[in-house]
Image (tube, rainbow, N blue to C red; front, side):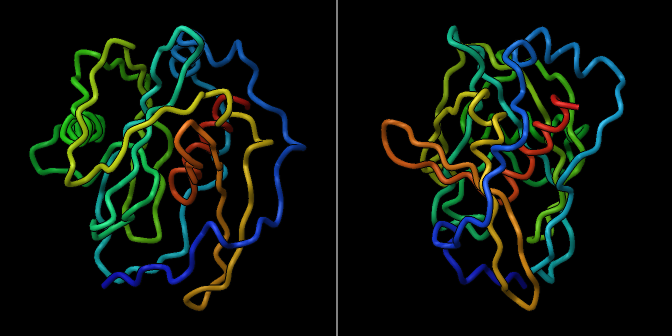
Length: 225
C-alpha cells in the first residue's frame, strides 16, 4: 500500500536557499570534462541517498536516465512531466526511467529501455558516462541514476500514457546551489525534508523537487568535490 502525500510541495515554505555554496564552474560542465570525471577514480560523498519511507509495498529496483543534451549554448538536462493518472509520482517532474525488467541486462539497460519507451529516445543518440549512487525513494523505489550525453539531433516522441510534457533545463542552472531551495514538513509521523529547484521557462514554472532534485544534488556534489 502506498499513501500519497497530502500536501502540495509548492505550498510548503522555503526554510533556506543554498546560495552560500559554490557553483560548479563552467569548465567542469563540458562534455569532455564530464567524461573524464567519470573515468577518474576520486573520493566524494553523496549528500542524499534515501527518503523516509511512506510505502508498505516491497522495494522495487529501478533506473533513471539523466540525459545531458549537447546544445551549442551548453549542456541541458532533459526532463519529463509525468501524467496525472499514474499510480506513483504522478504529475511530478522526473527523469525518464522506471522499474527494472527481468529481461534487462543491467541498470544501464533499464534506463536506456525506459527512456526509449517513455520519450522515444533512440540509444544510437546516447553515450553513457556512468552512474551515480543508488537513491531510495519514499515510495520504495531503489533507483540507479545513469548519466549520459545525448546528441542534439535526437528526436523526442512522448508516450502520452506516461509523459505529459518533455522539456530541457540548462545544466549550469541546476548545478548552481543558489537555485536549490530547502523545505520541511511534518507528515505521516515524520519530519520530511527535501530540495526543490524551481525553473521558469517560456511555458511556466517547472517545480523540480523530491527524488529528482535529490539526485541532481548528488550530481552537483560529484562534480564539485
